[in-house]
Amino acid sequence: MQDLGSQSPKVSSSEKFPYAEELYRLQNYDIVEITIKTASEELNQIFSIVSGDQTNMAMNMGQNGGDLFYMNGYTLDEQGYVDIPLVGEVKLVGLTAEESKNLIEEKVRNFVPDDFFVRVRLGGIRFSSLGEFNNPGKVTILQNRVTIFEAIAASGDMTTIAKRDEVIMLRQYPDGSQIHKVNLNDKSLLSSEFYFIRSNDVLYATPLKVRELGAGTNFIQTLALITSTVSTFALIVALIRQ
Image (cartoon, rainbow, N blue to C red; front, side):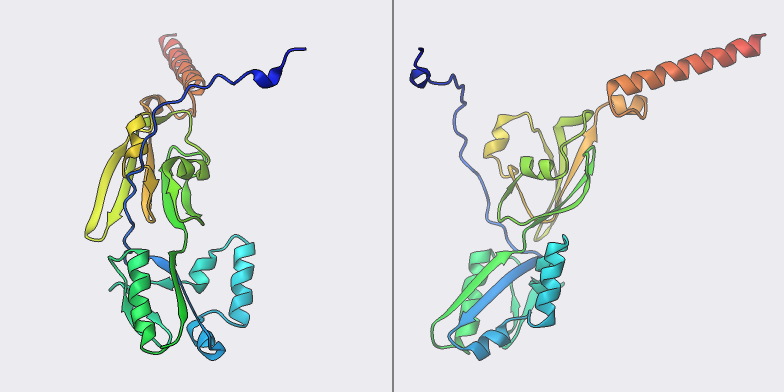
């Protein structure tokens, strides 16, 4: 009997591409989860913004597909502030999650001199997908990091007439918005800043030229539509000439 264990699979691999991920800086209207724990149960109740019936409501929303972080997270206002119980208003816009954590620790230390714990993280990655996606719309992925291919998968993949070499990405920055064109077929994407999407990104899948020729979702349907249109036009011309 042939020893199958001695055979190694034939695998073709490319070179590794290092990540070029940039630290995300919080923007106005971002939702962040801020957890503050101390040795005092009384202080823990003050720092917690979800309690009693609100906790049950948030749990029900999470089970029913709602946005749990919207219920128990902190939303940066139009000035970039969050209002934390006991601590007061803290400006987080333009800061990373780690920088926000350090700033909040400084504020909490004024009220809690003993040991305490602070955690700050984004309430998932929120983005919008438009155009030639099978399931376009607003999407929230409860992860700290999401690749552009994961975002496409969460949108039901792209349709057969979508341009893989020209995906429009609208990205927001603290000082404004900028449009980028992303080529999914270019392997250098793996080491670019656009490989990982950011919260509030908008992805637009542009259609191929075939979309301009008809309303079919693929070439066969479009060809059938064109053929039917030509046949109808020829019939009308023939009737007119009679």
